[in-house]
Length: 177
Image (cartoon, rainbow, N blue to C red; front, side, top):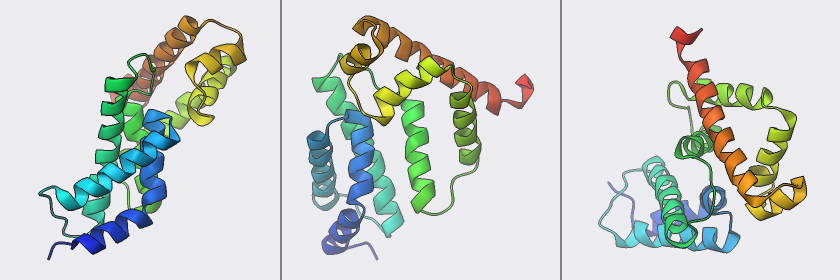
């Protein structure tokens, strides 16, 4: 039997911090993340979707929050440099794995590969990643903190995203060992 509207809202509001955080990682704006959470809750009870259990609802809500965040960025902040889709997926999987049951096969390996790759990243590059993604600073604030131009921040982040993806792919491909 599908969840009723009251159960859907109860489960969503219980998961509100995780869902809002998932949106925040994408949009880097607390108010926008809250708006996205509210849109997800509204869609869950007004769209023609049904959920057989809490896990299905929360999985749908995480994906929907992420997609709404990406859509918001595309429409309103074309100059924003965000994490690549694959890295966002890894972060969402890590959140899901830490509080929503067992991880899917291979997810643990990807997270370990990401951690290994980050550890091997030069200190100045890690500093930029920490400022941008862990402290939530804008690219302009990162440029000011590090003492480089805004275009250089964009270029370095783009290069770091590519290098991290390649590093993860190498670590996960047994043929490259």
